Amino acid sequence: MQRARLAVVGLALLWSVQAHAHAQLKQSVPADGSHLKQPPRELVLTFSENVQLTALSLETGGGQASKLRPPAGPHARISVPVTNLHAGSYVVRWRAQGADGHVVQGELHFTIAP
Image (cartoon, rainbow, N blue to C red):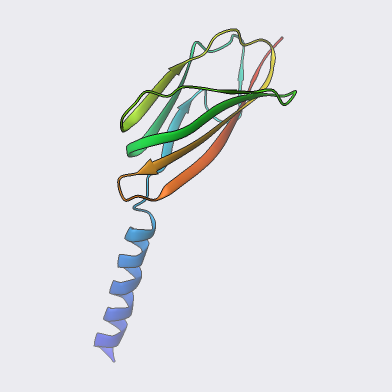
């Protein structure tokens, strides 16, 4: 009985480690939900491992989207310059493929004060 319990606990721990093994966005600049006094000069996405960014866009509160060009090759820290941002709300949408082949995606929101 004790061996069966240990086996179940071991499998649960192994599954937990594998479930979190995919690349994750660890940090962004600007941070999700941030309110900025001045427009950022760049967007920075920092992942838990090297990823190949397959899509990156910046959308205004009015729904106008601009595709951004991420650097080529896999990176854990991706920096993309942005210009001509004005007061308002923005959404950054991203999609990336990790070393394990799994695709992860997400979005972050920020606001620039008038």
